[in-house]
Image 1 (cartoon, one colour):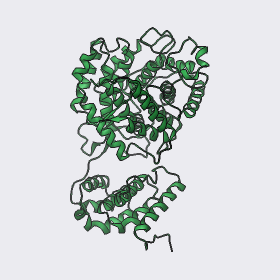
Image 2 (cartoon, one colour; image 1 turned 90 degrees about the vertical axis):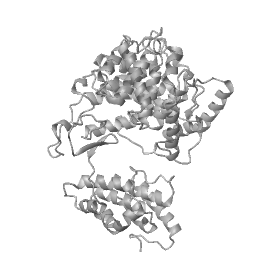
Image 3 (spheres, helix red, strand yellow; image 1 turned 180 degrees about the vertical axis):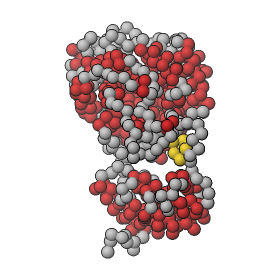
Image 4 (cartoon, one colour; image 1 turned 120 degrees about the vertical axis):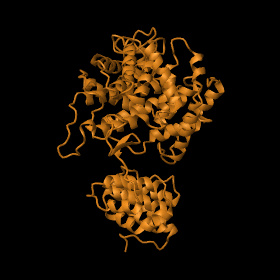
Amino acid sequence: MLRVSHAPSALVALAAIAVGLLAASPARALTPESPEVKAAVARAVAQLKKVDMDTLQRREPAAVPATGQYALIGLALISANVPKDDPTIQKAARIVRSAIQSGRIGEGYNGVYNCAAAISFLTSLDSKQYKPDIEKALTQMLRHQKDHGGFCTDNKPYGDTSMTQYATLGLWEASQAGVVVPAKAWEGVANWFVRTQTSIGGFVYGPDGPGGVAAAALQLPTTVTHSMSAGGAGSLYICGYFVKTSNVEPKKESPDGPKLPPSLKPVDGGDKAARVKVNIDVGALENAMAQADKWMTDNARKPIVGYTNYYYYGLERYQSFREQYTNEFPAEPEWYTTGAMYFLSSEQNGAFVDTMGSGYLEVDTAWGVLFLTRRTRTILKEIEDTANGVLIGGRGLPPGESALQLKQGRVVVKPLSGPADELLGIMENPNDPKFAAAVEGFGEQVVAADEAMIAPLVLRLHKLAGQGAPEARAAALTALGKVRNLDDVPVFILALDDDDVAVVKAARDALRFISRRFDETGPALNAEKADRAKAIEEWKAWYKSVRPDATFDAEP
């Protein structure tokens, strides 16, 4: 059932594809929002929903080794925005929780993987409801941490890089669920990864000595692999991020900030009880990060030998934590485009096939979904929003707060209902106490609107797009875009230079919709001034190609 056969010819073919993709310069950037990426994720979701979990459970029942597979399937579906009450997700949750409660989830060779994957899955599903299960899974996983700090379930005396990277992720995910992770566990994995890093900056699968890898391994770069190096590098940054966020006081509420009810006060990445002081040499950690960064950069375009899907799963985690740690967030990173091209090329009927991978299509496909949806980046962004007072995932949402609701994981004001022209009247006055609710309500109407609804409002929308509050300007531009009138294009092009990101996005999306140039990428939402100016000139050139006599306000 969904087992991959490692045919030599298939290995050669896929290796050739991977090399070609890594060596080629992509024609254009891909992002999680690219139509072809979203379509591939949708097909993968359909494939994962077809997995017969009962058959999967019978396939390898001893010591519940498949529990991590159920967790990965559920995690991938959640990452792809499948509703959490979906039957496949709920069945995965029942199987995973049963394994935890039986006390057997940590048994066998896959014990660390199973525990860590279960923690990630249940934290994403509902960290509050399943906190007791997460605590139990963490306890069982910690039994496999050795005195040297690494994790291992077999006879490797000095640890296992693959298991330890999963364990490090499990520690972090548990901490996000408000579970107390012992400082000793964090100190152990951080020091272990610093010690076992090779002299060239990468990581090997199985270190051979108490102080690190064997001398022979240091002289054999071929023993350093992409998948283990991505896992090691990502783990270093997870530890660094945890140190940075755990040894600071929670953000205080600003006296000038919005006044929220007590039950909606900002939370700081989890319960206070989950905050621990850790004693880690940050200098040594950052030195190891720098060496790992160099290896990852130097080897980014070299052939990947084995476990390609696993590598990209680890790469997304590494890059996301690195972005957060360094506070640098490229809008369209090349590494993502390269990985997305790989997955698009390896897809077969919705499954992301890696004939040199795990041997199980459901696992390799789940890793592909987690990469393509940028699951780690999404989580870190949600945590950042939470720290800034924007609640996520229902965390802290009290019953009976009638003015608030969850929308795509965020707490927002409930939309105001009523005729569109009345909502627009409120939006024209940002001091109106119903302003935010009117913007939400108008935005919901625009989604289903047709030209007949918007046409009578066009003149007011033009005015609002040029001088309203940012939220109202963005809503007005989105509505105007639905009309698909070429006469409005100059309005959208001028709005691309707005200081508000939401306004720029609304204008860019409207231009793409009107022009049917859905592959256009400019401007990136965080583009530098020069790049934004270039994108504006490109849109002007397009408009003049269809309207040769067109002029813009800045032109004579």
